[in-house]
Length: 252
Image (tube, rainbow, N blue to C red; front, side):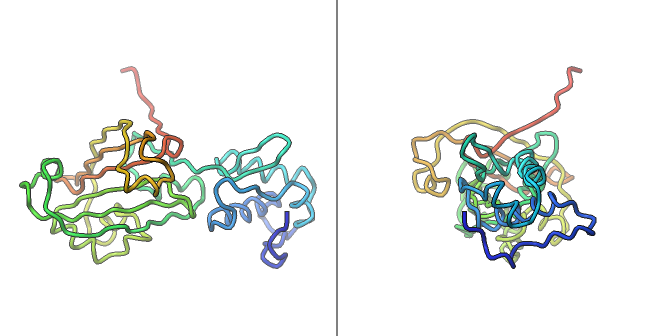
């Protein structure tokens, strides 16, 4: 494999506190995050890394093992290492933003804003937000990206007063939860979540790189502030291999 020019690689400084394998791990992780090594792409071999960074096979393997443990890389016996399809790890014990879900991977997150508009509320949206049918609400449709990989499609509706404030903010590079807390001064309280498996509208299927006949995970989430006021009604769609849930459930 032809690696990027040597000057792009972070030099290994034996006197630095960062261990050599960590430097290599970070170098590879940065390029996965940037999309230079795309989902499914084959990564440099252990021999490539040994030559590029002047390290032993043990050190090169440590770097790849660290990436495997974080879920960024998969190994195929006899073939080498490949960029894994990223999977959001969603806790059912705490209300988390998309960026917080992806933080353990060390991957930058962003959004493509596909639609930002004011629309009349349909019956389901009106019920979820506690407004009247046909009342004007803010509709936000985004594809959520980890690095350059689309992980989910989010369709969100907000009461118009709150939605108009969000419309002026950086919805492409900031999580809405953080914008609510840090820029609008809303204290998030809790969310009601339902999870099922369904099919996505045909117009959105290509965004997730699937056919409209394929099943997807759907989260229906109503987010509330500390007083119980509904802030958002969301539909979050993800491929079956793009999201994982975990919870600790006590017996008593």
